[in-house]
Image 1: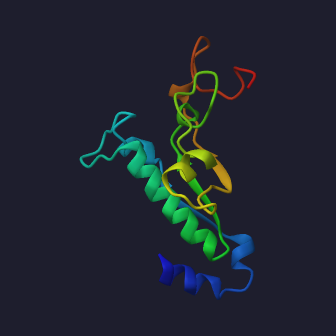
Image 2 (image 1 turned 120 degrees about the horizontal axis):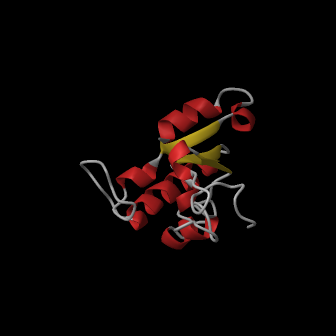
Image 3 (image 1 turned 90 degrees about the vertical axis):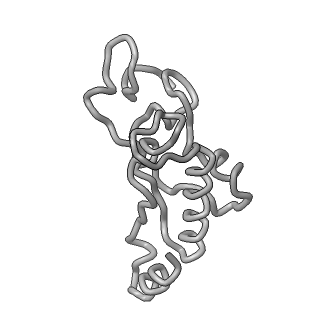
Length: 126
């Protein structure tokens, strides 16, 4: 990671125009979700990975995001089950103030909508 960030930081204006996505839809390989891949990790292990990467990327001046699979895992109220990528969640597993996301990149699919439940941002006041 560091050699890539070193090279990228030499590009003029890269730190102000580049957002690095650490991982896309990491929830699908976490045991708590449940995992649907051959190799699964705990939520704490994935949070540690994301937190360490975020801190390293921030040390080079870049912005960071994660392509989260659903609002289901990115909220503190309503129908959300967890908020895996909040600043406090990431900093709880890695004691580093640079362990945070600059942008919440949360995916939304048709399966997430139902009039009586679901993970739509327009259904509930939060």
